[in-house]
Image 1 (cartoon, one colour):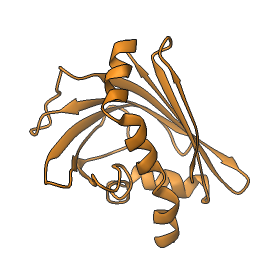
Image 2: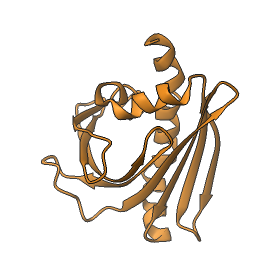
Image 3: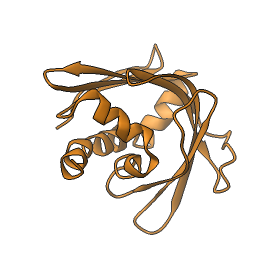
Image 4: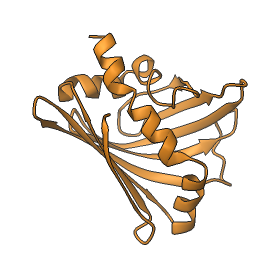
Length: 163
């Protein structure tokens, strides 16, 4: 399984997920940069993602939604802050209404995704920080840890099929 570690620190308001993939950094980066590929792995298998907009460029936005088994939609947005291709990107991530306007009743996270070459593959370290411990607890209670793990664990299989 790609996810090798999950660390939650309520005092620091942070969750860090470490995963390793059997593909070079450039290939894993290409998956995150291409909305059609990212759609295949962003949501857990039960909630596939659709990206209406996606561009890994500083100042750009990504808009997406995940579709649940009964057809329900869960929308979100990214505001891309920094990009250091293929090593890292940072973005704010929030929940959205169906029209992609931010849902200010739910937490926003501040994310850093780092990619490094290890043993012929790639290690992803995803650090997500919230403005408060309560905000982090809210998303943990919503199943964020389980959903992220299921989503990330799809990446190796997708990369193998699309090679």
